[in-house]
Image (cartoon, rainbow over all chains, first blue to last red; front, side):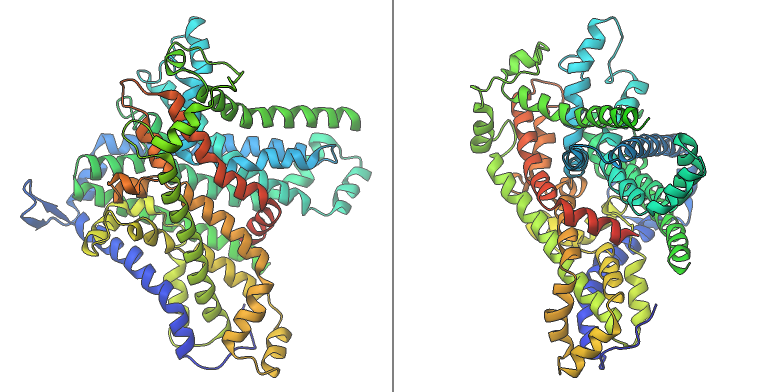
Length: 293
Length: 276
């Protein structure tokens, strides 16, 4: 979509776009090149000799069962967080779309958790689920359930999924509600007149009209779960017990910052960047098609 | 039929509200308890309103290993404001240039920015740290904020808003003899005020809630944000003073929640219009 009316001159616009371009090159492209370079080299234990090793870092990365496990774990974690956040967000949005008394208050109550920091949601969920001090965790323990996420990997995973999804529900709520409200009332009326009601009307009329919003939310939720949850996971489990909650980003941090294995950590960064760019391209293709239609 | 539907909707929404509010309420109550009582698992849903001392305590003196909370609030405010304002300024300028001008390499510039759309700082953490080292920005306040200013989301949002401005408006401004910068200041920015407000909310919250980047780039306690401080206060195993942790968590929640709730109308509209 190109404008017809524009301003003349090329020096001013180049000056205007310069700050963003400079920041983009310094903080995106330069680091990306550094990562690409380091992913192809290996530094000896004393940090003196750097040797070019080709794709060896990538080969050993993908041969590493721990890394493959981390990939699978991340996929499962992202899918669980997305399903929970989107599902709950949809249920709440459908309820809030009705003409209810106190509707505005309900909306505020659903929207504010958008402001909660991932690391803060971790603290809140520790207070709920910790087996010694947690409100729910202690209840479970005193009722004979062996609940201890510091020892049990599955329980730890459940806990980071809950805390991560909890924070993301409101984002999904906002978008699904906006999507529902953009459906023309006439369409719903027509479906009602044709005798489509309840769940059937929702499935055959509302859901197809919502599907672009839902696709968008799935991509956003997956990206959120993959990257923004570092604070949640690190504060609750630091990726443990025994890597049970170590997602790919946690592993990048752990290998790079804690264990100082730069070659492997950079190779992991490169893999993640390629993954994110692919997701972006997928979404852009889809969004492009939609705005073109 | 309709009535039972409404009744069901109320139930669902009340349960949802409880799901969101209860954890915070519990944290508030915990902040009023003795740490020893929390360690014994004696949490309750009734706060001891006469015991708000832990809030004043952490504000003035901080907790084990962290500076006073008021200091961390200053750092968090500074970081969130720098990110929000910085991002909005550079994005308005670049979107204005890309939409209202033709210049060499315009498409290349747009694509160079666009590719970074969803590349969060989390995936480029180690290499960005290396670059920051070369720039001598490690453990500095600009080091906290500047790398997070560079991103494409805001540029894309403004590009969409600007592209929707009718040609007649631009034409009229030109006939009145307004140059490009006048046009930007007197017409474009007022017209996009709602998007601007929405973007401010989104970016303020984004900046306030950062964890991984400050953790990596800033090590001196004087640069601790409040989010960093909270996690630091959870001792690895020994004696965490949970009342102080919870008081800090509640304080940390207040500014972004106030921003979101008070600007809710704009924020929701800008968010849902912008991303689609």
